[in-house]
Length: 258
Image (tube, rainbow, N blue to C red; front, top):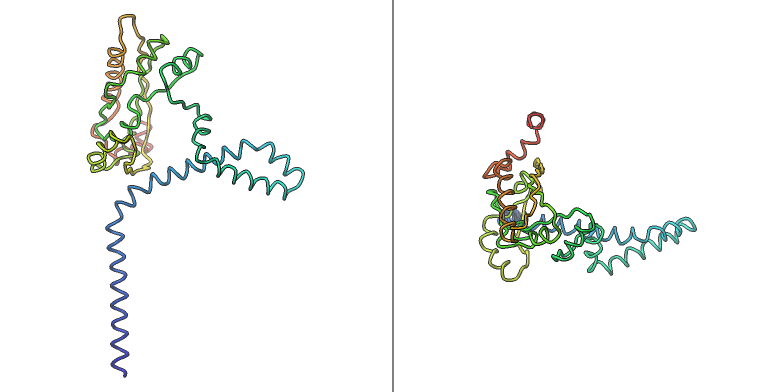
Protein backbone atom coordinates (compact mmCIF):
# COMPACT_ATOMS: atom_id res chain seq x y z
CA UNK A 1 0.00 0.00 0.00
CA UNK A 2 2.87 2.32 0.89
CA UNK A 3 4.63 1.58 -2.41
CA UNK A 4 1.41 2.25 -4.35
CA UNK A 5 0.98 5.64 -2.67
CA UNK A 6 4.55 6.62 -3.43
CA UNK A 7 4.09 5.55 -7.06
CA UNK A 8 0.91 7.60 -7.46
CA UNK A 9 2.56 10.67 -5.93
CA UNK A 10 5.49 10.29 -8.28
CA UNK A 11 3.22 10.04 -11.32
CA UNK A 12 1.28 13.15 -10.27
CA UNK A 13 4.50 15.09 -9.81
CA UNK A 14 5.67 14.10 -13.28
CA UNK A 15 2.36 15.06 -14.84
CA UNK A 16 2.44 18.40 -13.06
CA UNK A 17 5.98 19.03 -14.30
CA UNK A 18 4.92 18.04 -17.81
CA UNK A 19 2.03 20.53 -17.72
CA UNK A 20 4.36 23.32 -16.63
CA UNK A 21 6.88 22.52 -19.36
CA UNK A 22 4.11 22.28 -21.94
CA UNK A 23 2.73 25.69 -20.95
CA UNK A 24 6.18 27.20 -21.15
CA UNK A 25 6.61 25.73 -24.63
CA UNK A 26 3.23 27.10 -25.75
CA UNK A 27 4.10 30.58 -24.42
CA UNK A 28 7.50 30.48 -26.16
CA UNK A 29 5.87 29.41 -29.41
CA UNK A 30 3.16 32.07 -29.37
CA UNK A 31 5.25 34.90 -27.89
CA UNK A 32 6.12 36.53 -31.28
CA UNK A 33 2.46 36.42 -32.31
CA UNK A 34 1.33 37.93 -29.00
CA UNK A 35 3.88 40.74 -29.27
CA UNK A 36 2.97 41.44 -32.91
CA UNK A 37 -0.74 41.85 -32.27
CA UNK A 38 -0.65 43.30 -28.74
CA UNK A 39 0.35 46.81 -29.84
CA UNK A 40 -2.45 47.22 -32.42
CA UNK A 41 -4.89 46.01 -29.76
CA UNK A 42 -3.61 48.61 -27.28
CA UNK A 43 -3.95 51.35 -29.90
CA UNK A 44 -7.48 50.19 -30.66
CA UNK A 45 -8.41 50.34 -26.97
CA UNK A 46 -7.01 53.89 -26.67
CA UNK A 47 -8.90 54.92 -29.80
CA UNK A 48 -12.10 53.42 -28.41
CA UNK A 49 -11.61 55.20 -25.07
CA UNK A 50 -10.92 58.52 -26.81
CA UNK A 51 -14.10 58.33 -28.85
CA UNK A 52 -16.17 57.36 -25.81
CA UNK A 53 -14.71 60.27 -23.83
CA UNK A 54 -15.60 62.72 -26.60
CA UNK A 55 -19.15 61.43 -26.80
CA UNK A 56 -19.65 61.84 -23.04
CA UNK A 57 -17.84 65.20 -22.93
CA UNK A 58 -20.21 66.57 -25.53
CA UNK A 59 -22.97 66.21 -22.91
CA UNK A 60 -20.97 67.88 -20.12
CA UNK A 61 -23.39 70.79 -19.63
CA UNK A 62 -26.39 68.51 -19.17
CA UNK A 63 -24.44 66.30 -16.77
CA UNK A 64 -23.18 69.28 -14.77
CA UNK A 65 -26.72 70.57 -14.30
CA UNK A 66 -27.89 67.09 -13.28
CA UNK A 67 -25.14 66.75 -10.64
CA UNK A 68 -25.94 70.25 -9.32
CA UNK A 69 -29.59 69.23 -8.85
CA UNK A 70 -29.07 65.75 -7.42
CA UNK A 71 -26.02 63.49 -7.22
CA UNK A 72 -27.84 60.27 -8.07
CA UNK A 73 -29.65 61.93 -10.95
CA UNK A 74 -26.26 62.98 -12.30
CA UNK A 75 -24.93 59.45 -11.83
CA UNK A 76 -27.88 57.98 -13.75
CA UNK A 77 -27.45 60.44 -16.59
CA UNK A 78 -23.71 59.76 -16.69
CA UNK A 79 -24.36 56.03 -17.09
CA UNK A 80 -26.96 56.83 -19.75
CA UNK A 81 -24.38 58.96 -21.58
CA UNK A 82 -21.83 56.12 -21.41
CA UNK A 83 -24.24 53.58 -22.82
CA UNK A 84 -25.43 56.05 -25.44
CA UNK A 85 -21.79 56.53 -26.43
CA UNK A 86 -21.36 52.76 -26.54
CA UNK A 87 -24.29 52.58 -28.95
CA UNK A 88 -22.73 55.22 -31.17
CA UNK A 89 -19.18 53.92 -30.92
CA UNK A 90 -19.28 52.14 -34.27
CA UNK A 91 -19.57 55.55 -35.90
CA UNK A 92 -17.53 57.35 -33.25
CA UNK A 93 -14.45 57.57 -35.44
CA UNK A 94 -16.26 60.31 -37.37
CA UNK A 95 -16.47 62.39 -34.21
CA UNK A 96 -12.78 61.83 -33.49
CA UNK A 97 -11.84 62.86 -37.01
CA UNK A 98 -14.06 65.95 -36.70
CA UNK A 99 -12.42 67.02 -33.44
CA UNK A 100 -8.92 66.79 -34.94
CA UNK A 101 -10.03 68.23 -38.31
CA UNK A 102 -9.08 65.09 -40.24
CA UNK A 103 -10.84 64.85 -43.59
CA UNK A 104 -10.83 62.33 -46.46
CA UNK A 105 -8.70 64.84 -48.34
CA UNK A 106 -10.13 65.28 -51.82
CA UNK A 107 -8.26 67.75 -53.98
CA UNK A 108 -11.07 70.31 -53.87
CA UNK A 109 -11.61 70.09 -50.11
CA UNK A 110 -7.88 70.55 -49.49
CA UNK A 111 -7.79 73.55 -51.83
CA UNK A 112 -10.72 75.09 -49.94
CA UNK A 113 -8.94 74.60 -46.60
CA UNK A 114 -5.79 76.33 -47.89
CA UNK A 115 -7.67 79.20 -49.51
CA UNK A 116 -9.39 79.77 -46.17
CA UNK A 117 -5.97 80.52 -44.71
CA UNK A 118 -5.43 77.27 -42.80
CA UNK A 119 -2.34 75.08 -42.67
CA UNK A 120 -2.78 71.61 -44.14
CA UNK A 121 -0.72 68.48 -43.45
CA UNK A 122 -0.69 65.78 -46.10
CA UNK A 123 1.03 62.38 -45.98
CA UNK A 124 1.43 61.21 -49.59
CA UNK A 125 2.75 57.80 -48.50
CA UNK A 126 -0.36 57.15 -46.44
CA UNK A 127 -1.01 53.76 -44.89
CA UNK A 128 1.28 51.96 -47.35
CA UNK A 129 4.37 53.87 -46.24
CA UNK A 130 3.38 53.64 -42.57
CA UNK A 131 3.00 49.85 -42.65
CA UNK A 132 5.64 48.76 -45.13
CA UNK A 133 8.40 51.31 -44.69
CA UNK A 134 11.57 49.98 -43.08
CA UNK A 135 14.72 51.19 -41.36
CA UNK A 136 16.17 52.30 -44.70
CA UNK A 137 13.63 55.15 -44.91
CA UNK A 138 12.76 54.85 -48.58
CA UNK A 139 10.08 57.28 -49.69
CA UNK A 140 7.09 55.21 -50.83
CA UNK A 141 4.79 57.62 -52.65
CA UNK A 142 4.32 55.54 -55.81
CA UNK A 143 2.75 57.88 -58.39
CA UNK A 144 0.66 59.96 -56.02
CA UNK A 145 0.40 63.55 -57.17
CA UNK A 146 -2.77 64.70 -55.41
CA UNK A 147 -0.88 66.89 -52.96
CA UNK A 148 0.93 68.56 -55.87
CA UNK A 149 -2.39 69.30 -57.59
CA UNK A 150 -3.60 70.91 -54.37
CA UNK A 151 -0.52 73.14 -54.11
CA UNK A 152 -0.77 74.18 -57.77
CA UNK A 153 -4.48 74.98 -57.62
CA UNK A 154 -4.22 76.85 -54.32
CA UNK A 155 -0.94 78.48 -55.36
CA UNK A 156 0.71 77.83 -52.01
CA UNK A 157 4.17 76.53 -51.09
CA UNK A 158 4.85 73.02 -49.80
CA UNK A 159 7.08 72.70 -46.73
CA UNK A 160 8.87 69.31 -46.71
CA UNK A 161 8.85 67.59 -43.32
CA UNK A 162 10.64 64.58 -41.88
CA UNK A 163 10.65 63.06 -38.38
CA UNK A 164 13.92 61.44 -37.35
CA UNK A 165 13.74 57.90 -35.86
CA UNK A 166 10.08 57.47 -36.75
CA UNK A 167 10.80 53.95 -38.07
CA UNK A 168 12.44 53.03 -34.77
CA UNK A 169 9.40 53.97 -32.68
CA UNK A 170 7.19 51.42 -34.47
CA UNK A 171 8.18 48.64 -36.82
CA UNK A 172 6.61 45.98 -38.98
CA UNK A 173 8.30 42.54 -38.93
CA UNK A 174 10.15 41.70 -42.12
CA UNK A 175 7.97 38.66 -42.77
CA UNK A 176 4.89 40.87 -42.39
CA UNK A 177 6.12 43.28 -45.04
CA UNK A 178 6.94 40.50 -47.50
CA UNK A 179 3.90 38.25 -47.01
CA UNK A 180 1.14 40.79 -46.42
CA UNK A 181 2.07 43.51 -48.92
CA UNK A 182 0.22 41.86 -51.81
CA UNK A 183 -2.77 41.20 -49.56
CA UNK A 184 -2.90 44.90 -48.65
CA UNK A 185 -2.59 46.02 -52.28
CA UNK A 186 -5.58 43.86 -53.22
CA UNK A 187 -7.88 44.44 -50.23
CA UNK A 188 -6.58 47.75 -48.75
CA UNK A 189 -7.03 46.14 -45.32
CA UNK A 190 -4.19 47.15 -42.93
CA UNK A 191 -3.94 43.70 -41.33
CA UNK A 192 -0.23 43.90 -40.66
CA UNK A 193 1.34 43.19 -37.23
CA UNK A 194 3.43 45.99 -35.75
CA UNK A 195 5.57 46.18 -32.66
CA UNK A 196 7.43 48.86 -30.83
CA UNK A 197 6.22 51.76 -28.70
CA UNK A 198 9.93 52.32 -28.09
CA UNK A 199 10.62 55.66 -26.34
CA UNK A 200 13.10 56.79 -28.98
CA UNK A 201 14.13 60.38 -29.55
CA UNK A 202 11.97 61.97 -32.23
CA UNK A 203 12.87 65.23 -33.95
CA UNK A 204 10.88 66.80 -36.75
CA UNK A 205 12.78 68.77 -39.38
CA UNK A 206 11.25 71.25 -41.81
CA UNK A 207 12.83 72.02 -45.16
CA UNK A 208 12.70 75.22 -47.17
CA UNK A 209 9.30 76.08 -48.69
CA UNK A 210 8.92 74.95 -52.28
CA UNK A 211 6.87 77.36 -54.38
CA UNK A 212 5.15 76.02 -57.51
CA UNK A 213 5.98 77.77 -60.76
CA UNK A 214 3.85 78.31 -63.81
CA UNK A 215 5.85 75.64 -65.68
CA UNK A 216 5.26 72.93 -63.08
CA UNK A 217 2.96 70.01 -63.68
CA UNK A 218 1.66 67.88 -60.80
CA UNK A 219 4.21 65.20 -61.70
CA UNK A 220 7.24 67.52 -61.82
CA UNK A 221 6.27 69.38 -58.66
CA UNK A 222 5.63 66.12 -56.78
CA UNK A 223 9.09 64.95 -57.85
CA UNK A 224 10.64 68.16 -56.45
CA UNK A 225 8.93 67.67 -53.11
CA UNK A 226 9.98 64.02 -52.95
CA UNK A 227 13.62 64.91 -53.60
CA UNK A 228 13.44 67.54 -50.85
CA UNK A 229 12.11 64.98 -48.36
CA UNK A 230 14.80 62.50 -49.38
CA UNK A 231 17.41 65.21 -48.79
CA UNK A 232 16.07 65.73 -45.26
CA UNK A 233 16.30 61.99 -44.63
CA UNK A 234 19.86 61.85 -45.91
CA UNK A 235 20.91 64.81 -43.80
CA UNK A 236 19.26 63.97 -40.48
CA UNK A 237 18.77 60.19 -40.36
CA UNK A 238 21.24 57.38 -39.87
CA UNK A 239 20.50 54.68 -42.44
CA UNK A 240 19.80 51.92 -41.66
CA UNK A 241 18.08 53.07 -38.51
CA UNK A 242 18.89 51.52 -35.15
CA UNK A 243 16.51 51.21 -32.21
CA UNK A 244 19.42 51.17 -29.75
CA UNK A 245 20.95 54.35 -31.19
CA UNK A 246 17.56 56.05 -31.30
CA UNK A 247 17.11 55.24 -27.60
CA UNK A 248 20.59 56.58 -26.81
CA UNK A 249 19.68 59.84 -28.57
CA UNK A 250 17.54 60.59 -25.50
CA UNK A 251 20.60 60.68 -23.25
CA UNK A 252 21.42 64.15 -21.82
CA UNK A 253 24.85 64.41 -23.47
CA UNK A 254 23.38 63.58 -26.86
CA UNK A 255 20.60 66.16 -26.45
CA UNK A 256 23.10 68.83 -25.35
CA UNK A 257 25.32 68.09 -28.34
CA UNK A 258 22.37 68.36 -30.71
